[in-house]
Length: 286
Image (cartoon, rainbow, N blue to C red; front, side):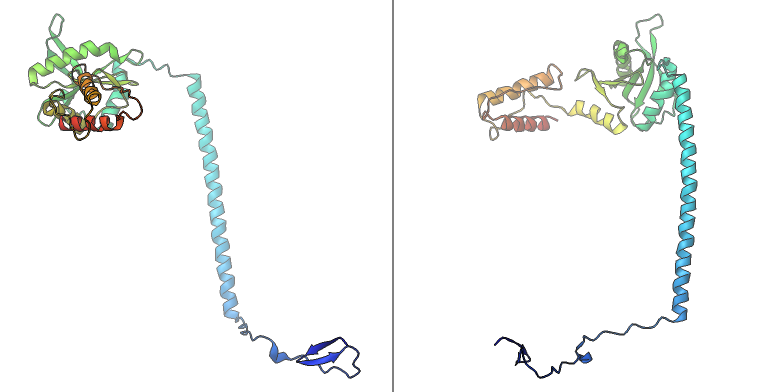
């Protein structure tokens, strides 16, 4: 007959004797008692909450003040934009204005203080005019007193390249007087070009060079070695078309004063080795 087993004792479902089960309090898990909060502790908690509320109100008040200030500033900016829209900038500045508004600031950002009279409107000889004299807009001088660079400025609506021939004549005059040919810069305040006419054609740049950068350009002129005479490392390339490619690139750089070259080879022909060998030659020739 079916039944229930309690403490290894079978209890018959139809047993007539009464059950003797009792609730045993000692069987419950023991827990640590919760300490009673004293009046001092409760008062401390109340003070801390009040202090947090005060600080929160101060933060909210400050945020409201900042929001009001931002609204006012946005309104002022919108008013300024409206005024500018009513009087648009035509970007048509004279050469003098271009120097004052753009060139002076850009040169000073590049580390040229322009604190000496020779930095601006420097006189040079050999110009094709009645007096034979011209004035360079800006000259960037080295610590040895020799010109590192010169800058010819045109007004904003004119191309800076319009001063290319004029700047070349200025460079001729400075080279004749100081024995060092400066690097040429051309600008209209918005576009800037660099022209190291002994080595490369003019190219567009983002800003003017610092003194150390110009000194490096001048120094490289004197330390260069001939690419045509440099030995190509046979441990890197040993195929005739690889060495021929390197010689042609050297010719483009050295004789034709180019700054870029494109090499086209079939897959597996060794383009990577060719470029590594070319870089080795360029580094050894400075």
